Image (tube, rainbow, N blue to C red):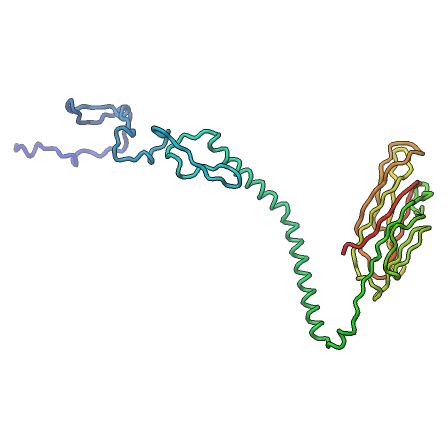
Length: 295
């Protein structure tokens, strides 16, 4: 048999499908050819010269430097920091706090999204009104516009020294006042104090139709043991139809004749010719009322 027939090439060896920890590797060392168990085969930075330190996970070798960028007041590690740095909490705390800050900002933005939508709706409505107004003005002659006089006078009022004999638990006790601290500037706005009633102007008398008014009341009302005592606001339109708008309630835990605060605020819409009045189902010793236009 020829010598070349006994030669075995690596390519002639069977291909294995896995390496077990009990398998052996053949290595060439300075002390000769050796065998080493696969479980003892260790790969690290010291024996792989072709791998850069920055590609190896784990602690940085030698002196490590940490560099930060300040983002929204928080120190955040940047890419100038030594690769492989084994970070501690105080080094990444800024990143964590920035995450919390961003989360809270997003949560707050979500909470006001409804307000944003409502405001946009109001803006769209104003733009529509302005477009209609522009079309109306363009279609109106200069002579007609020169003859128009726009007047709007306040119907704001403040009254004090209020009282009521109450309705003995029924909501029909009228409330009266003795002092007018602020009278309406608009002469077409009429006020009676005993019992209190304010009637707003009709059309073309200095009041924008469907205006919003803020109503603020501060009263002392007689206690009724464990029973609420209320103050009611009624609106009557120009056709004499009356509706109850709102009521304020105070929970009375004492017995008569103790008096307790009953304060309220409400926003109501007023049309031409509307009137407002108040009543109470309990005895009122004192009180004041403010009504003023907000738009």
